[in-house]
Image (tube, rainbow, N blue to C red; front, side, top):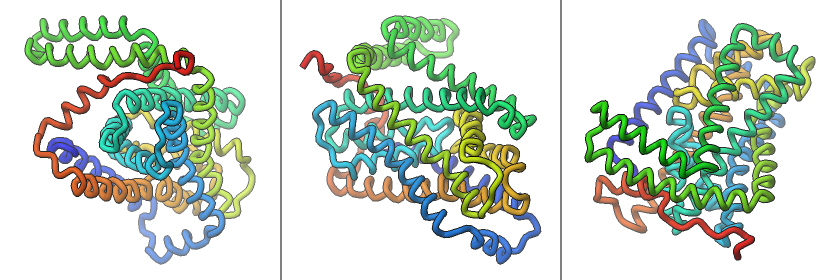
Length: 373
């Protein structure tokens, strides 16, 4: 289901993540014995860590709830476990691609394999993308305003990275909203941009025709999507509430690790504030899984919160549960799903099938709004 070039890119990204993980481990535990590291990890309260595992699962399942809810709006009866499968696949590809760019296209393809129209999945992914980023920005603004002194004191010299994150996230949301709410104008601008690149000899005329055709199909779908969103604002509010709870379930993991070591002095909201700032700072950076920079931000932001000797095992537990465990489990789910699809449908022989499916991702009809039914 994935072409050769993408397999190579994914392999390189996974190797990059593994290398960064190894280097981070070596830096954090330089001149430390493995037995000492295990002893520090063993100090964490197991009950709190089980709570942490549950929180990460709720984060993954939170997207599954949104997917199932939106499919229910479209009168599609899909089992929750199948939606959970889509979430694990999405997070796996998101974590191994720069700026989380590979997750949603992969989810759409696996949904198509299960008989879900691209018209449905493309709208679901569009809404999830907008709301997911919007919630992060709103939470970031809230905590920056109401916990300003605490945030600035602990973020320190990295505050520029938080500001950059705000700019990138807001620009991304604005672009999605413009495309969704003004699709005809956006398509016109996109076609002009392609024609300009042709005149500059960046694209050949033949390639530009294919790109314009693809762009037209995609934006035709966004025309329908924008109407559906305007006619279903109540469901959009429900999705936003689900997304806030989903985000919180992951952001609270650092607080759970904090409590697992029996630490006191910083409140739940203060720790959430710093974790939200990390999310704002790193999520839009073009690094697979934001590997490396996330750990660096954690050390800087939380060095005054965690005891010095506990900052390293805390990072290991946090990233181990929220990132590496998700990659491993998501990878296994993706592999099993891929093998089952090969057994069910046979192996794809057309090397361009993947690209064709993505290019036609917006062709299917978006369902009518509830008001039109």
